Image (tube, rainbow, N blue to C red; front, top):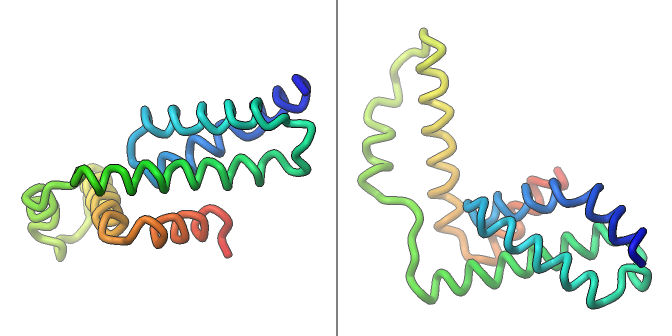
Length: 135
């Protein structure tokens, strides 16, 4: 069992942290969720699972969904509308300077976060899973 667990840890941890971070938008929470998923893998028994990566992906997604729903019940919000308004002050400006490109990338990232925040938890999971698997 230890060998299967160690292999699953080495091969899938970075992928799972990335998946959880895309859903939760917080690296600390993403790390926590992945730790919980791996602890559940230990409790279940890694040898009893046919595809540890798929199992961990499902468990991590469900744990993220639970955290998102819990945060919504507590009415937590991650993006400030005033910040969003400032970020998109003049979207028609030409990109001549590489620093402007970085600023534009930050604006797009912020817009994506706002869009993800407006989705229901189930829609967010579906969107991220679609993005991860590219189907």
